[in-house]
Amino acid sequence: KDAIILDQHQCQVFVRGAPVKLTNYEYRLLAFFLHNRGCVLTAKQILDHVWGRDLGEHTRSLHTYVWRLRHKIEADPQHPNFLLNEYGI
Image (cartoon, rainbow, N blue to C red; front, top):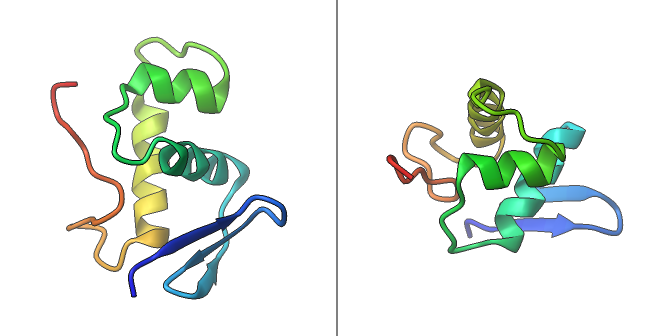
């Protein structure tokens, strides 16, 4: 079964039953996405919450983190099921 389990007490993530090692920012990013499941989030909202500051036009870091996270949690990162983009938002 495709499922992500985030254990906030142990700061652990399990994908399809297997533990996944994430960096601190990857973990915070995934937790924010899961907390806002089903919502469309802007880059500014994500940056402000996860990094705690406005990085302005520097969204390249965000794109890199999402790319890395997809490769750790998606069965097929090129066709993601969990982390989807809404272009133009």
